[in-house]
Length: 112
Length: 114
Image (tube, rainbow over the protein chains, first blue to last red):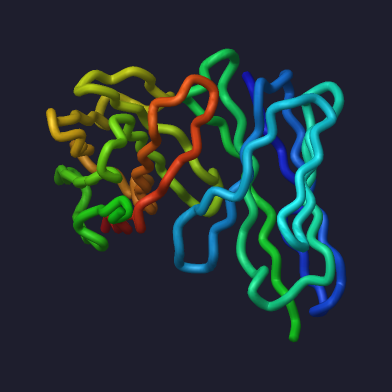
């Protein structure tokens, strides 16, 4: 069946280091969304990418959507302790924009 | 605007019992989705309701059901609880836009089945 995989599962960095998480889909996606969940919290929407090869930036966060629309990445420059949490990618089930399939997330820990 | 609210926040039940969870979406949002979150399986889509109709369904057994009311509030019911149903149940609402499906999540209901 359709799958969305994220790597790595965990990442531990020193504050100030960069961080990247990768998301790979078994099928072409019409769009991909990224969410952040703080420990004990709920997922919060970060961004949606729609176009092939799209790159979007939010301050220290850079999001990319692959040319084939089957993979995506989130890169954080110079991590801060406020970046701690789990980052999820999610894409629509085959052709159904209202039903999302989620990666298992990448948990980021930042040492001050 | 007030965010998505869910009640109760915590529940402890025993096997075989049933449970009802409630979700109030953001005002004006008519789409409500439910998810089950567990450490091993991540976020699993349960179902989506729109205008009181179940529009999409995930791969969960029939013990999991839901409904939506005319004010867009939604309830989710799990009957004959099993130990494996212990999870964080998240509700998310979204506005009805053609290709944009940003989900706004509530704080979740933490269900523990003993």
